[in-house]
Length: 243
Image (cartoon, rainbow, N blue to C red):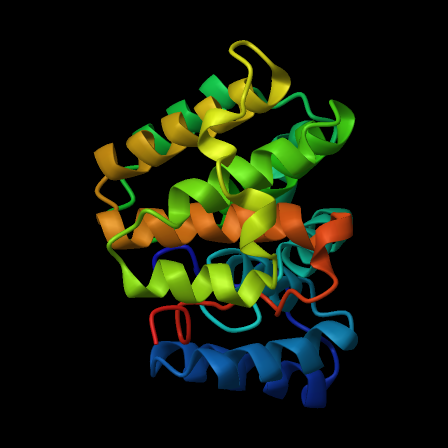
Protein backbone atom coordinates (compact mmCIF):
# COMPACT_ATOMS: atom_id res chain seq x y z
CA UNK A 1 0.00 0.00 0.00
CA UNK A 2 1.39 3.37 -0.99
CA UNK A 3 -0.10 4.97 2.12
CA UNK A 4 2.30 3.05 4.36
CA UNK A 5 5.42 5.09 3.71
CA UNK A 6 8.73 5.64 5.51
CA UNK A 7 8.17 5.98 9.27
CA UNK A 8 8.03 9.43 10.83
CA UNK A 9 9.07 8.11 14.22
CA UNK A 10 11.62 5.65 15.59
CA UNK A 11 11.37 4.47 19.17
CA UNK A 12 14.38 4.70 21.48
CA UNK A 13 13.24 1.35 22.87
CA UNK A 14 14.70 -1.53 20.88
CA UNK A 15 11.80 -3.78 21.90
CA UNK A 16 9.12 -1.33 20.73
CA UNK A 17 10.93 -0.57 17.49
CA UNK A 18 11.27 -4.29 16.84
CA UNK A 19 7.49 -4.66 17.15
CA UNK A 20 6.96 -1.81 14.70
CA UNK A 21 9.39 -3.32 12.16
CA UNK A 22 7.72 -6.73 12.54
CA UNK A 23 4.44 -5.05 11.66
CA UNK A 24 5.96 -3.48 8.55
CA UNK A 25 7.33 -6.85 7.43
CA UNK A 26 3.97 -8.54 8.03
CA UNK A 27 2.26 -5.80 6.02
CA UNK A 28 4.66 -6.30 3.13
CA UNK A 29 3.88 -10.01 3.22
CA UNK A 30 0.14 -9.37 3.16
CA UNK A 31 -0.48 -10.63 6.69
CA UNK A 32 -2.66 -7.77 7.90
CA UNK A 33 -3.64 -9.45 11.17
CA UNK A 34 0.00 -9.92 12.15
CA UNK A 35 0.72 -6.32 11.15
CA UNK A 36 -2.16 -5.18 13.34
CA UNK A 37 -0.97 -7.19 16.35
CA UNK A 38 2.60 -5.94 16.12
CA UNK A 39 1.62 -2.31 15.56
CA UNK A 40 -0.81 -2.48 18.48
CA UNK A 41 2.06 -3.59 20.72
CA UNK A 42 4.27 -0.80 19.37
CA UNK A 43 1.47 1.76 19.74
CA UNK A 44 1.01 0.83 23.40
CA UNK A 45 4.66 1.77 23.79
CA UNK A 46 4.01 5.19 22.29
CA UNK A 47 5.19 4.52 18.72
CA UNK A 48 3.61 7.35 16.72
CA UNK A 49 4.15 5.76 13.29
CA UNK A 50 2.52 2.56 14.56
CA UNK A 51 -0.50 4.60 15.64
CA UNK A 52 -0.81 6.22 12.23
CA UNK A 53 -0.41 2.91 10.43
CA UNK A 54 -3.13 1.39 12.60
CA UNK A 55 -5.49 4.20 11.61
CA UNK A 56 -4.85 3.29 7.97
CA UNK A 57 -5.09 -0.46 8.50
CA UNK A 58 -8.28 -0.32 10.56
CA UNK A 59 -9.84 2.59 8.67
CA UNK A 60 -9.46 0.77 5.37
CA UNK A 61 -11.13 -2.35 6.72
CA UNK A 62 -8.11 -4.60 6.25
CA UNK A 63 -8.88 -6.64 9.37
CA UNK A 64 -11.89 -7.68 11.42
CA UNK A 65 -13.59 -6.28 13.37
CA UNK A 66 -13.94 -3.17 11.23
CA UNK A 67 -13.81 -0.56 13.99
CA UNK A 68 -14.06 3.05 12.83
CA UNK A 69 -13.76 4.44 16.35
CA UNK A 70 -10.47 2.68 17.04
CA UNK A 71 -9.14 3.91 13.70
CA UNK A 72 -10.20 7.48 14.49
CA UNK A 73 -8.69 7.26 17.98
CA UNK A 74 -5.35 6.23 16.47
CA UNK A 75 -5.60 9.07 13.95
CA UNK A 76 -6.14 11.60 16.75
CA UNK A 77 -3.31 10.17 18.85
CA UNK A 78 -0.89 10.08 15.89
CA UNK A 79 -1.68 13.73 15.16
CA UNK A 80 -1.20 14.62 18.82
CA UNK A 81 2.15 12.82 18.69
CA UNK A 82 3.23 15.02 15.80
CA UNK A 83 2.84 12.65 12.85
CA UNK A 84 2.87 15.02 9.84
CA UNK A 85 0.33 13.20 7.66
CA UNK A 86 -2.04 12.63 10.57
CA UNK A 87 -1.80 16.33 11.44
CA UNK A 88 -2.26 17.48 7.83
CA UNK A 89 -5.46 15.45 7.45
CA UNK A 90 -6.81 15.98 10.96
CA UNK A 91 -9.15 18.78 9.87
CA UNK A 92 -11.13 16.19 7.90
CA UNK A 93 -11.76 14.01 10.94
CA UNK A 94 -12.54 17.01 13.14
CA UNK A 95 -15.03 18.29 10.56
CA UNK A 96 -16.67 14.86 10.32
CA UNK A 97 -16.97 14.59 14.09
CA UNK A 98 -18.77 17.90 14.41
CA UNK A 99 -21.07 17.07 11.47
CA UNK A 100 -19.59 19.83 9.33
CA UNK A 101 -17.84 17.88 6.60
CA UNK A 102 -20.62 18.09 4.03
CA UNK A 103 -21.96 15.23 1.94
CA UNK A 104 -20.91 16.89 -1.33
CA UNK A 105 -17.36 17.47 -0.07
CA UNK A 106 -17.09 13.87 1.07
CA UNK A 107 -18.26 12.58 -2.30
CA UNK A 108 -15.87 14.94 -4.09
CA UNK A 109 -12.91 13.68 -2.07
CA UNK A 110 -13.91 10.10 -2.81
CA UNK A 111 -14.24 10.74 -6.54
CA UNK A 112 -10.95 12.61 -6.78
CA UNK A 113 -9.02 10.02 -4.79
CA UNK A 114 -8.50 7.80 -7.87
CA UNK A 115 -8.27 5.01 -5.36
CA UNK A 116 -8.68 2.11 -7.73
CA UNK A 117 -10.38 -0.88 -6.14
CA UNK A 118 -9.45 0.00 -2.55
CA UNK A 119 -11.11 1.72 0.39
CA UNK A 120 -9.43 5.00 1.34
CA UNK A 121 -9.09 4.89 5.15
CA UNK A 122 -9.56 8.62 5.77
CA UNK A 123 -12.69 8.72 3.62
CA UNK A 124 -14.20 5.66 5.26
CA UNK A 125 -13.50 6.88 8.80
CA UNK A 126 -14.86 10.34 8.08
CA UNK A 127 -17.93 8.99 6.27
CA UNK A 128 -18.89 6.57 9.04
CA UNK A 129 -18.49 9.11 11.82
CA UNK A 130 -19.99 12.00 9.84
CA UNK A 131 -23.18 10.15 8.95
CA UNK A 132 -23.56 8.79 12.47
CA UNK A 133 -23.29 12.34 13.84
CA UNK A 134 -25.89 13.61 11.34
CA UNK A 135 -28.32 10.79 12.15
CA UNK A 136 -28.04 11.49 15.86
CA UNK A 137 -28.09 15.28 15.53
CA UNK A 138 -31.25 15.38 13.43
CA UNK A 139 -33.06 12.43 14.99
CA UNK A 140 -32.92 10.52 11.70
CA UNK A 141 -31.28 7.29 12.87
CA UNK A 142 -34.33 5.02 12.77
CA UNK A 143 -35.53 6.26 9.37
CA UNK A 144 -32.06 5.98 7.83
CA UNK A 145 -31.52 2.45 9.14
CA UNK A 146 -34.96 1.34 7.95
CA UNK A 147 -34.38 2.84 4.50
CA UNK A 148 -30.92 1.35 4.11
CA UNK A 149 -31.85 -2.15 5.29
CA UNK A 150 -35.03 -2.22 3.21
CA UNK A 151 -32.97 -1.23 0.16
CA UNK A 152 -30.29 -3.77 1.04
CA UNK A 153 -32.96 -6.49 1.25
CA UNK A 154 -33.53 -6.01 -2.48
CA UNK A 155 -29.87 -6.74 -3.29
CA UNK A 156 -28.80 -9.62 -5.52
CA UNK A 157 -25.64 -10.09 -3.43
CA UNK A 158 -25.69 -12.87 -0.86
CA UNK A 159 -23.08 -11.01 1.21
CA UNK A 160 -25.49 -8.11 1.63
CA UNK A 161 -28.20 -10.39 3.01
CA UNK A 162 -25.62 -11.87 5.38
CA UNK A 163 -24.83 -8.33 6.53
CA UNK A 164 -28.52 -7.68 7.22
CA UNK A 165 -28.70 -10.84 9.32
CA UNK A 166 -25.66 -9.75 11.32
CA UNK A 167 -27.37 -6.49 12.27
CA UNK A 168 -29.88 -8.54 14.26
CA UNK A 169 -32.64 -6.09 13.35
CA UNK A 170 -36.08 -7.59 12.86
CA UNK A 171 -37.45 -7.45 9.33
CA UNK A 172 -40.69 -5.95 10.59
CA UNK A 173 -38.78 -2.83 11.63
CA UNK A 174 -37.27 -1.99 8.25
CA UNK A 175 -39.88 -3.46 5.89
CA UNK A 176 -41.25 -0.59 3.79
CA UNK A 177 -38.48 1.76 4.88
CA UNK A 178 -37.80 2.73 1.27
CA UNK A 179 -41.22 4.31 1.02
CA UNK A 180 -41.41 5.93 4.45
CA UNK A 181 -38.95 8.78 3.96
CA UNK A 182 -40.42 12.24 3.61
CA UNK A 183 -38.98 14.21 0.72
CA UNK A 184 -36.52 16.81 1.98
CA UNK A 185 -36.35 15.36 5.48
CA UNK A 186 -33.03 14.91 7.26
CA UNK A 187 -33.15 11.15 6.65
CA UNK A 188 -33.89 11.75 2.96
CA UNK A 189 -30.87 14.05 2.68
CA UNK A 190 -28.62 11.63 4.55
CA UNK A 191 -29.54 8.67 2.33
CA UNK A 192 -29.09 10.90 -0.70
CA UNK A 193 -25.60 11.69 0.58
CA UNK A 194 -24.86 7.98 0.85
CA UNK A 195 -26.05 7.57 -2.73
CA UNK A 196 -23.65 10.31 -3.84
CA UNK A 197 -20.78 8.71 -1.96
CA UNK A 198 -21.49 5.35 -3.59
CA UNK A 199 -21.49 6.90 -7.08
CA UNK A 200 -18.30 8.84 -6.30
CA UNK A 201 -16.50 5.71 -5.11
CA UNK A 202 -17.49 3.87 -8.27
CA UNK A 203 -16.17 6.80 -10.34
CA UNK A 204 -12.84 6.61 -8.52
CA UNK A 205 -12.35 2.98 -9.54
CA UNK A 206 -13.95 1.07 -6.66
CA UNK A 207 -15.83 -2.04 -7.76
CA UNK A 208 -19.58 -2.28 -7.20
CA UNK A 209 -19.07 -5.05 -4.64
CA UNK A 210 -16.54 -3.06 -2.63
CA UNK A 211 -18.63 0.12 -2.80
CA UNK A 212 -21.60 -1.86 -1.47
CA UNK A 213 -19.44 -3.20 1.37
CA UNK A 214 -18.40 0.37 2.17
CA UNK A 215 -22.02 1.48 2.40
CA UNK A 216 -22.96 -1.49 4.54
CA UNK A 217 -20.05 -0.72 6.86
CA UNK A 218 -21.10 2.93 7.24
CA UNK A 219 -24.68 1.88 7.98
CA UNK A 220 -23.38 -0.76 10.37
CA UNK A 221 -21.48 1.94 12.25
CA UNK A 222 -24.67 4.01 12.52
CA UNK A 223 -26.46 0.94 13.89
CA UNK A 224 -23.66 0.28 16.40
CA UNK A 225 -24.21 3.74 17.90
CA UNK A 226 -27.99 3.40 18.05
CA UNK A 227 -30.51 1.66 20.33
CA UNK A 228 -30.83 -0.98 17.59
CA UNK A 229 -27.37 -2.44 18.23
CA UNK A 230 -28.38 -4.93 20.94
CA UNK A 231 -28.07 -7.99 18.70
CA UNK A 232 -25.68 -6.58 16.10
CA UNK A 233 -22.47 -8.46 15.45
CA UNK A 234 -19.15 -6.59 15.08
CA UNK A 235 -18.52 -5.19 11.62
CA UNK A 236 -16.44 -7.38 9.35
CA UNK A 237 -13.39 -6.23 7.46
CA UNK A 238 -12.30 -7.30 3.99
CA UNK A 239 -10.93 -10.57 5.38
CA UNK A 240 -14.42 -11.78 6.35
CA UNK A 241 -17.13 -9.58 4.85
CA UNK A 242 -17.58 -11.46 1.59
CA UNK A 243 -17.39 -14.94 3.13
